[in-house]
Image 1 (tube, helix red, strand yellow):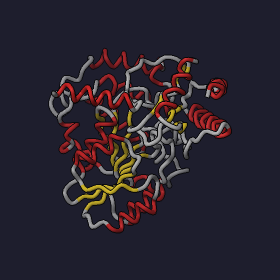
Image 2: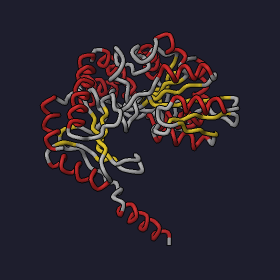
Image 3: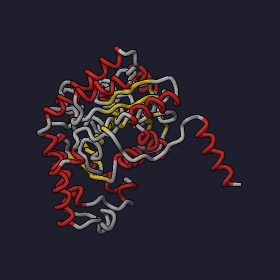
Amino acid sequence: MVEDYFQQELENIQSKNRYRRLKAPTGMDFSSNDYLCLSQHPEIMESLHRGIKLFGAGSTASRLIRGHRAIYEKTEENFSGWVSATSSLYVMNGYLANLGLLDCISHKDSEIFCDRLNHASILDGIRLSGTKVRYYRHLDMSHLEELLQKSEAKTKIIVSETVFSMDGDLADLQELLRLKQKHEAILILDEAHALGVFGNRGQGLANDKAFLSPDLLEKVDFRVYTCGKSMGLQGAFISCSRKEHKKFLINRMRPFIFSTAPMPAIAYAVNKSINLIKRSKEQRTKILENAEFFRQKLKEKGYNTLNSKSQIIPVILKDEEEALYKAGICQEEGFDVRAIRPPTVKQSRLRLSINAGIRIEDIKRLLGIL
């Protein structure tokens, strides 16, 4: 019986302490990606409200039918200027951006080189494309170079997150650019968790001269950014090094072609978010300083935080049961901390996320519970 299969699978998931439940947020936020707390910013909400008055609620269709609005192009130009890209395409969300981009630009003569710990949207995009793929060990540039040297593919595509969403560590952008140029590869960087937190004006890791020489930025073929994290809204941008890249995506990227366009009111509000992030240097400094303080104190207590160097701090635990127990204790004490378990990650953990609203006093209280 088909129904027996579903029930058996659910029971199997539960027996491994991997059963997922939906839970509305309560307590102090130590789990979301709202790093600059802009989702609740009054100017963002006011801008969104004004956008609805100007453009209505829905977009009504794909941007290639009747769903296109001038505000999309205006926002794309504004975003491109901010992150120093030649052009950008605004799409529904970061998952579809990665999925559609990888499927769109790869072909039968391509080979993709993917960090083993890249986000699920990247992995799923590769699977969807059907392209040959080589996974290199996490952040291991020597292994990546070895794989590139062995490849006979006509088109080589390297893809990496810049700030890794579960481990909180950082990609070596200088080395990725060196290998991209040496092997004449296409380079895709996913800046989802770097946007708003890194860069002098919050543009992300690739725009931060501490991590990448400014003269190399234009060599990055594609950068993917989400509006659902630091920007406090919804949607995503694929930023391109050439205008032809954007035109190609419009003509070939299936999730863009066949999806209803995002709400134009959100595209309108994105411009307000950009302006706020540009002025949030103090908040960025505070986030990274508080994260470093938290990491050091966790290490003093004997916790393994891997090689985190960002606002994302993993606390590695023994197994799923311990992760659920620790998260439950934190939630009982008023802290919204979530357990992340296999198969999402290899090792069960708490994923702690530092935002601009968290104070040192809050961190000290949570440390007392952990």
